[in-house]
Image 1 (cartoon, helix red, strand yellow):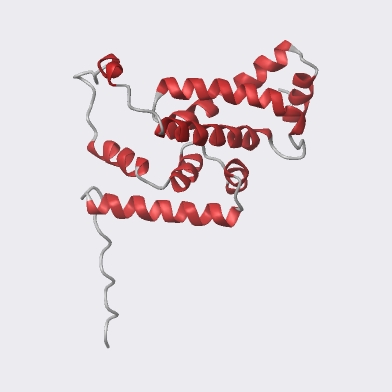
Image 2: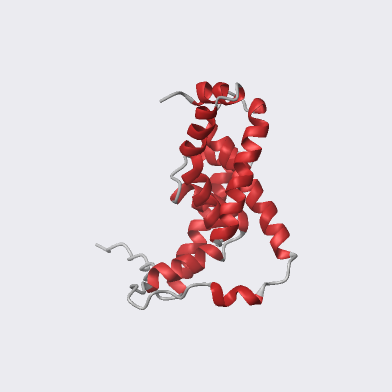
Amino acid sequence: MPTDEELACRCLRSEPDATRELIARFEADVFAVSLKMLRHRHDAEDVAQEVFLRVFRSLKTWDSTRPLKPWVLSITVNRCRTWLGKRAKLPEPTEFLSDVPARPPDAPANELTAALRGVIDALRAEYREVFLLYHEQALPYDEIAVAVGRPVGTVKTWLHRARQQVLSELQRLGHVPPPEPPTPPATR
């Protein structure tokens, strides 16, 4: 398997196999981040296509001393932010609501999973981004920092705050027991 730098060089030389290989290498991550941020499959598919167009258009500006994945994911995060901004200004298309398939009746309803999704969705956008990149994509702090365009310290702070909010809300909803009060030290 070629390194990121070798693959990028081959793409810049317009080798068709390299283009397909780069897309194959990152498409699952790009789509997963897009889907988590946008919460709509068709929007995520559209954004993923835009991401790869931008990747190939901007590949010559990529710093080859850095890993390619965080750079690609930073483009993904930025495209999702732009998409969300545009989507917020549009009216909700009600005629398509009947096209959304209902959940199969035999699908297990997991209250904790549903509650967790709701809590994560309710986080501030910045917190949700770093939370998902860390916990869903298993990216290290430095790669998340590149992806969201913030210092590592900020990423750690946002992730800590996101975790605290998730835990606090799950406790409030009764899905996680509250912390036990500290026991006083034994007297002798």
